[in-house]
Structure formats: structure tokens, C-alpha cells
Length: 489
Image (cartoon, rainbow, N blue to C red; front, side, top):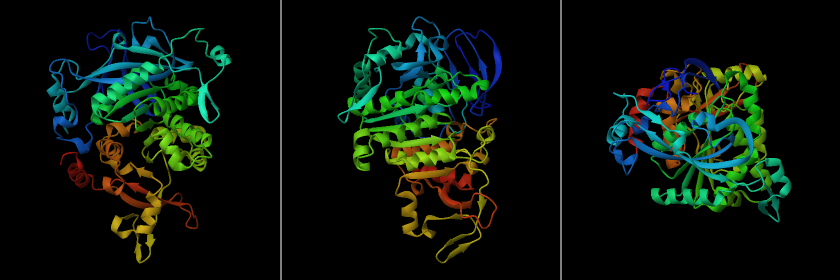
């Protein structure tokens, strides 16, 4: 769900049903209004780096009357009712053992001229709200990807008839991999791009929430390539937290198959992944599996085969030790680079830490500033500039392509949602940093981040300290400087 203060209304063509349920989405607060059809979700905050950017960044073919359409490809593991009239009825909160493929157009700026949509999309302070809308009538189903795959003679092949029995999809289900790949290739050619981006959602979300989130991310990535919404069967209930977390583990095979299929059967040269909250477990564990499957293959060859580029783990609701174990199994060698966003103001992950009894990767509590000692540098502060850091140390911190970024200071400078968990979309500084990483592959220094040092507890004898990157405390200066990094400036 989306943050407090972000209005949500379903069915802009006529509201019906009931309103006013407060829900917790992995820590996000939302107001939900159910209706007969469609969805209306307010567009995310403009990333700081794009404020005032020209129209050419967002779209080459602006619609004049009916908003700006964004095609979102869908790969979901939900049971489906093709006869249902509403999206929330068609896509169930039950696991399908097969991966379903489709496409759904999302219109940004329903009822607004396309030029006005883009004007408000790029404004720091919007004069009008910009809504996204989609409906069941626009959904195009391609069929199923397949029945599961195993390694045979170094390749992935379809499994036996036994797997067909396990899926329960019938004797002759429609397989849509070929049509799905052709549609993605057509979109890549139309956009003049070779990048596929996949968004993996978090806890307590519905199908339509995740499709609209994928559309707005695609919008702000400049429609660069094809966007896929990968969906697992969240129950969309605050009380189903542990049920959802279990469900996310049941789609690891689905996600692994999708990544391999895209690498082998589409024209994509780079596959980027954005995971949020509980969805980061799907991402991290799948990367771990892919590393172990290719245990006897070099890092360069793994990246060449799988084509996985930049990975974002936003507010990851995964145990810190679980994440470390995945990295020790080689999860970090599969993509070209990974950015992890954490925050000490993330109340949702603070609660998750209490429920699990272990530290969450996206929370990182008890960070205590310690004096930095680097050669002749001895300062009673925790922040250092790039020029203060010996090249050998900075190289060691960045060579592996793993960037850990503290979003705490960015959140302090911007209004927080109820649980402060959805900042990757609604905080203009964090979304700006994410776009610079995904679209341009910029490293931390090129994104104007600062290097910091802290200890994890107040024990002066503790050796457990860490280096990480952070947004500057002076956010006004950062906002001014980051605008100079905007494309075309």
C-alpha cells in the first residue's frame, strides 16, 4: 500500500463501495476505497534530479487527450479467474504453481492532456494531482511460462509430466513464453533500448497496487526499455504478515525461471531488478540460487549468461544474517552492482525486528558515530569526503559493486509516511539516487553521497563497525547540486 498523505481512490469514473480502511503494508499506511472497476493511485513524488526536466526525458509520443499510457508486462504466480470483471477479482491471493504472463496498460494522468501530465510529473510542487488508472478490460494474457525447469547437461529444460500434474493447470494449458518474449522484444525495439526492469513488491499489496507502482517507476526511468511487474500472492491484509512472508518464499522457482527465460529468449542485454520490503527476500534468495547453480562458472561468465545488471534492495525486510549468508554463497556476484537502502527511521522494520527477534537488513539500528582514523586523518566525526579517503580503501569499498546507503538523513528532510517504509518512491532524494544508479550506473560519489563510519553498538571494545554511504545532512545543498546531474544538463 502507499504512504500516509498519499490519497488513493478506486474508480475515478464513479466511486462505489466502502472507504476508509487503514492498512499496514510492510509498515506503510494507506487509505483504501474499493469500487467497481479500475484504480486511481496518485503518482509518486518527483525525484529531485528530474525537477524541471524537459519533456523529452519522459516520453517521445505524448498523448493529447487521454493521459500518457505506460505498458506494464506482468509475470505473476497468482491463481487467475479470466472471467472476472475487476482486477482485484481476477488475480487471487492464492499461489499458482505456474508463472502467468501478461501485459496491462496503465494510464498516467487520466483525463489530463499528455503535455499537462508531463508538466506536473516533473514539478517540485504540483498544482494538480496526477492519477494512474488501469482496468481488467485492458489486460492481455499470453498464457503460462511453463511447468518448472531442471538442469540437464548444463542447460535448463522442461521437466517431466509429473510436474504438469503438480501444477494443476490441466492437460493442455496455453504456453505463452514465445508471445511474451516477442512482445518484450517489440517494446525494446520501439524504445530503442536493451534494458528490462523488474519490480518485485512487498507485503500486503494487491495486484493493481503493484502494476501501478511498476508503471510510475517506468515513467520516471524515462520509459527506457520494458517494465515487468513480478507478483507473488500477497493476501493484502495487515494481519497476514507471516503468511505473506511464507508465500514470498514459494515463488523463488518462478522468479528464477523468469530471469533465465528473459536472458535466453529476449533481446535484453541488461536485466535490472527493484525489490521492496518483503520482495527483497525473493530477489536475494533467487540470486543466491543462481550463484549456487552456476558454482563452477566464473563471475564474468555468470553475468554474461544471466545479464543481470543493477539491483536495488529498498527497505529490505530480510534478516541481516540471512542476507550475509546469501552474499557468502555468492548472491552478490550474479548482478553487476547492488544498492541497499536502509533507514533508522523505518518503524515497519523496527517492528519486524521485534517480531523476528533479529536485526533486519533495512533497519540497521544502534549505529553510533565513531572517530574516523585514516592515516593522518583523525576526526571526531563520522563523515569524510572522497578526497579524504585513500584510493585503496575507496576501491575496496566499491570494487565489489555493493553499495550500502543510509536514507535516514534524507527522510529527516522530508515528510515521513506513517511507518516511514516506502521512502524509495515518495522521498525525492532517495528516488533520485535510485534513478541515477539504475539509469546511468553511477557510483556513490557520482551520486553525491558521503562516506560514513559507525559502530553497531556502544561497546568501545567492539570490533563490529562498518563503512557505508549516506545522503548529506544539508539536503537543500544536495537538491541544488543533484539537479546538475540531470540528463541533458
